[in-house]
Length: 366
Image (cartoon, rainbow, N blue to C red; front, side, top):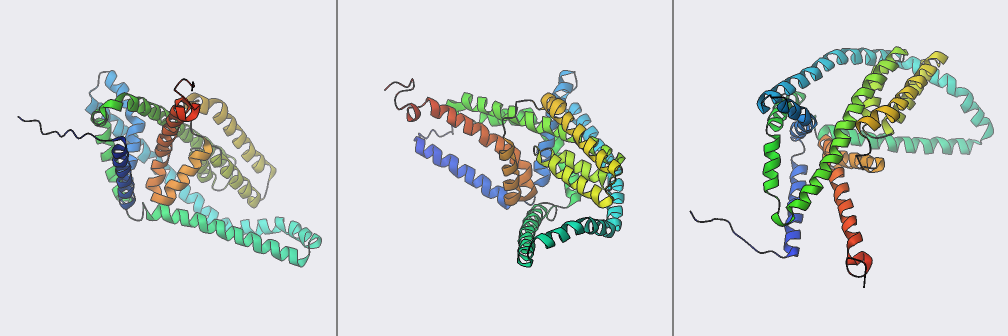
């Protein structure tokens, strides 16, 4: 049978143009299909998260199909059971918070009134009016930006793909990707350019190491912290303590940001509830213990120094992904940031070895 393959010699410029065109087509398709990609991207993320466990069960003697079936069923059963327990509790706290909201506003106004009066005595009417207008303008801008981001996230995911489709499609995608994970990896490996396959494999291993350290390790840290903060703030008697605690723990995915937002929200709510000393003290103790737990035990043990992603880079990638592609972009932000970070380090390393940096040959000699 004749060989149907074509061997077309290409110049380096032609290869670069082909790769650039491929990347552009990928980004355009991602933007066009962002409304229907959520269950597939989420299923891929879950499959990547569970792949090491499937490998352990396979090495223990189970077939890949049985190991995948068991892991998928147990994982989504635990998720469903957790939602079954948490949703009614969160709903009760939200209803209670809405009922007490007028009292919170009255309490805050009463506590801020002396400060407002003091400012009125010390500042002129023009200064007070300028401060009010500036605060109102900045607050309006911030609220508009946040609402725009939330609207973009929702319109790009939940508004187009219903929750039912997410619940039914994502487990199926997870099962098949987890079952065929090694086959997919081998297939992609067979597509690599032969002359650079070894270098690409090394960089892909570095990307996988970075993702494993951050996604798998940080996800475990977030779940642990969400459980701790949710229980701790609820036990202190803070209204919305469970919701704030869960959001604080999950927000630890972005270093430092989740903890600071949770602490500010908890203290503000504690002041609005009446500013009892035991309530404010309990909130501070919970966050102090959580910070020590995260910084000295969870993050060093589960994440360590394998990540190589700066917190500012993570925050920027999440915001950019959410603004461009909605919730799908948020899910893809950290993998994309990992890829860009590894490639940037690879480029800098080769630049430092090149004549462009040394001004001469590879050894730095003229």
